Length: 482
Image 1 (cartoon, helix red, strand yellow):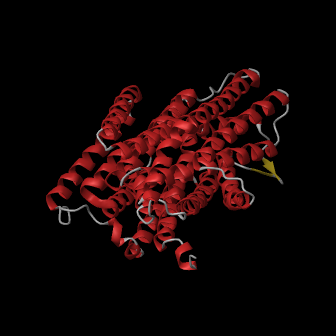
Image 2 (tube, helix red, strand yellow):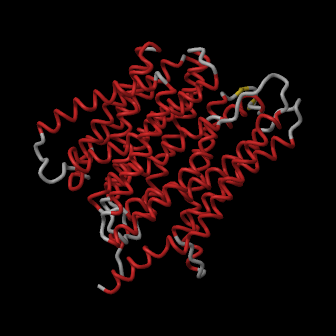
Image 3 (cartoon, rainbow, N blue to C red):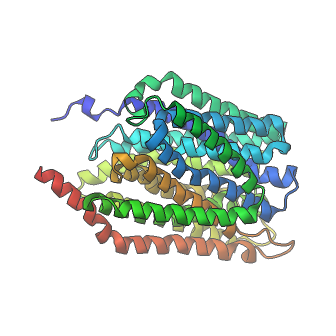
């Protein structure tokens, strides 16, 4: 019989929960208004603004692969997280206090800093669970709730502050959020000391740290340069993406059979996550534009900024996550077992249903009348269910499937999938359309395709489940034999 202490989550979870909460607060304060900042303040064409937005976010997630390798080989998780937090804070403050003249340099600091910070917080948390620890999935679900508290606060506050006081204040608040994340980690670092140190042989890597610092500054400059040249950035993203995917496959094939098979499952799940996030990210582009143009956003005389409607997604996650967490034990007590990979598949189903609903809303709305906000709330409810089923589970499975010496690399590859998806989302975003053009032409067909794409990916994953389950079953059989 297990006691209560065995069921308790590690204390490190609560530190990393708060650290990630404040980091996501800053990030979503930025991204929820960034496209509007480009269009309204800098007078950038809307299609180009979407591409700048998606390219920046892609760089931010793509850099997590390099950040993960640096944590595994040179810095350790702690130093990578601290350096990333400092770089991100500098980027936000440059945007807020320096203004538009510092735009691309600020984005460079943000992209590089995110690479060092984002994946390594999740990988560090994974170190506090044994391979078959039943606390892992609930722990990452709780961790994901912290993420969405930050998302809700940042995306809701950003539009209100930007509208009332200007974009500079909103970006400055994002920077303050990141500084709070940095202070939180420093104050509680004793709780993660056992796993956040540098790798063996790098306890005093002065030369390595110096070279790393120079490399990071060069990376900031190169990122700023590329983000200011979108066509070149697209080619570089494609080349880096193919190179990183190829190198990861080479690393996988060099592992022993059991590890290789688990990492191939991880690679397959990363592919399906690209499909998921490509469609999902349309909420920040196409759906936000739809809310701005064709949704009645008036609430008791107050018109909600269209950028703030994105906060409904985080609100749905916060409300539904506890219910979903309770759902699995409730089903198990009734003899219904839903495996991790099946839950992952259900995430794609909810995603597809969300966009199918939105296509029906557009079809049912007349060209003269705006859609009710209630439909947007329901859309975000379905979208939130998809994210709850897939995203925290993806993080948990990454830390389970990857061996310890590749933990940071594997987590970086997980976020590389997000990077690829975000860029594709910007390319596939619904165009603005022209005055008087029917909404059917602009939105309905695209939302319908997004919905069918999600359901089609779910069906493909369902067909692949027997193959994907095999390495996990073999791993369990080996451990039982021991």
